[in-house]
Length: 254
Length: 287
Image 1 (cartoon, one colour):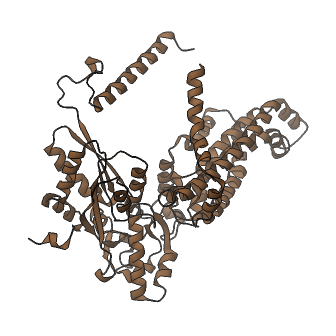
Image 2: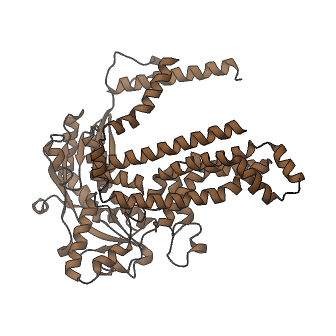
């Protein structure tokens, strides 16, 4: 048990550790002044925060609705909302193009003439939202399902409206789970690469997010790619810690 | 709980799968001492198949596949595995120890450092290429010349890391000097993406997502019918020279050299010219 389990753990820990150990701090700061870094950092911060806001604002009501109903068609909808989790990112990119691209399904409806959202900053946000929302919805769904139905029943019997129950009872009770889901979804959208590359392109300051900058820099300036990787990994690690803490709390409270 | 026999079935499948993998990799290395389960091996297989690994610039996809086919026809049991990507990406992979027998780059800049480091043997120029504008059919009436490029709503070009991106920079700089005014700035304002290899640049036009893209002449030939080609005046164009070399420590050095020879032979040059390339040196074309 110990040997195979330990081997896997070492295998999982070794790459991030090597990345960290082969980067020294002065090199990190020098590389952060690389021209690709600043715009990518700002763009990633902006787009992932917008997509996080969208995911939370739209995903919480969706998860609540899905948690309420348990009929078969609703289960199917739930599967639909999970689909992007198992979709390869490149497939997501092509699918987004076929929906929202210039010759996409919606092209005649949405865009008057030759316009399209593809290859704009908005496309980056859409790609990030597409791949990260299911993670939040999933976490929110299980957080809502863990709420003691008795509490909701009491609220209803006291005359609270469905909206009031959602805002004043369900959301506060599910908050740790929602926070954990938000952290996971944020980490996923920060790391988004394939769908962005295909649907939004690769243009510094407009659509070149951190992962795309890492990919581009790898072919010209390895230290810059390394520094960005350390940065991204560090932030993802913080999100992971937040998520675990939040999920532990939600587990303890249910 | 799954029935026990089912579990046993899975275990058996796993063992057989592992045996197949071990057997297959043993075959690849030409080590007949570790014979795979005999019933699974083909009865009268000829010599173990050899695999030639060719790393080539994305723009070489069509002619190299055709040339490779000729080589395969001449060598029984030969298989060619291609890795087509931006030359800078292939160079990074070779730098990091990727296994290959042949490397063909779209520029000298990605070949020379490998040559200097001894990672590849002596490089030889084998073809030249020029740039053209690939225009989506919908925009063909608007964009008829390089000077019309700013009229494109959305332009896609190569990233400066990739050879196509650097060649494009040269052409746009030449055009700015020739046309003056706001040409370069107007073009830059309409660039929506900078892709890491030329086939990705081209794909944005064939998908209809971009109105115009700057690609190699050979890519425009490959996409015949899907894009409208607008020539770039020769005095503003570049002369992209493609070098090829065998990779140091290649497992199939002899076959690798045979591939390179075929590329440089009249038959190979014919394929390249058909694909829209120019012969290696102007002298090559004459009798």
